Image 1 (cartoon, helix red, strand yellow):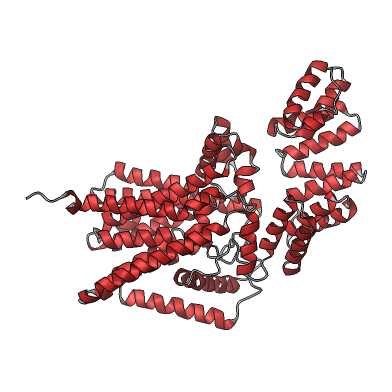
Image 2 (cartoon, rainbow, N blue to C red):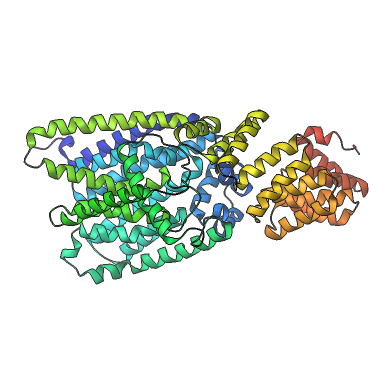
Length: 591
């Protein structure tokens, strides 16, 4: 008698994968109605002219050479360019891409685990926990975190290719592993820990340590380790150049280790009890000895349990070391950013933790078949609860005001949330509320350059340019390479008639960033006022080459052409300006 199709393991796996994708899409679907948020979405998409131009050879060159956002991630940039090519700046399309990638990752994780373990239902449980946990929401709902879902896709493809290689080792199959890994590194450098995870999989479930010596297994990973090392060096150099790393000197090593211990414990806590999730967790002034000691004790106890159980339950050690090891690049030893932890950092590490939990739970149930229905019911309730919590968390990412209002409610002293909420309110013309949030941010963090710059910008819009210049100067003392603050200081000085001082600021800005279109436009405007036409033309032309949408630069360029009697060129610029800013174009003479 032929077995029915549903009895075929491959068919059951395919059906489970399809169901998992469907559930994932349903849970996260409200994100499609969300807007961009004012936390890095501008840097990655909405204010990035290179990305907005879509896919092109010039865009490819920029993606490969850019250190924008203090990271090297060319594949992520190309994915954002592709979205702009398809959807323009309609946020729904960008959110759909993130969601589809996450759903694909859930299905691919199921496929990888089934392939390497042969256990369908345990693999499905891990994939479902991964897909539906509320800590995933940040990576899915935040357009700027495309790098999470995209890099994870290549992480999982690398694992799948590695399983294929292990079945019959060969140069071509190992080359495919390296190719997938390289793509993942170009999407997000956090994937540098993958060679370590491959060694863990050699131990369990692949069982290769029983058939080969450890040095041989390490040797076959050396090309991958070399790739990871190269990307690590590039990442550190780019981050240092962009000011994203704090480095070693500001915090002593002991303080960094304490931060790491507490962060690991907080990730475990939020895994079990995903409450109070926020887009940003402000670092405290310091951890108490009790907090550090308790965190170290928990980590030590769990590590000891995994080691002691390794002979009979190797999945506990593999899953635990996966979790610990893949968090190392972002755990705070080398600080990247101001956050003490971030939900998005658990995207790949959580897989290891869920492997340990699910396979460990199955091991405990051996010999107790009578309680398995209760365990299945418990897992079902857990997944339904996680799905409901994720659905609620998605709603907080609807827009900047909703997101940062929630972050303020979920945390204390959240200066970044106050600053970004103030920025969103200022965009709506709610000036007094915005100023209040900027000042609250500065009360929590007096040395916060962004809040100083934003408060200065608010004052400048009210015509208080002298007071505004003071805030811009404070921001620059804290961060001399802060280009926005220097540009704003130049504009404030120009508004006060301090042309020479303003020119000096813009020239310094161009020395820092020669491709800053707005700085070229500002210098061109100042030169225009001084009737230095030819010098002004050079800067205005360069500004429009970099940013064709700069209306002020086009206005001054048209005005200079008119003054020089170049009426045809003036008319051409006036027509282009009319499409951007009809009000400005109407101020120009007509030929």
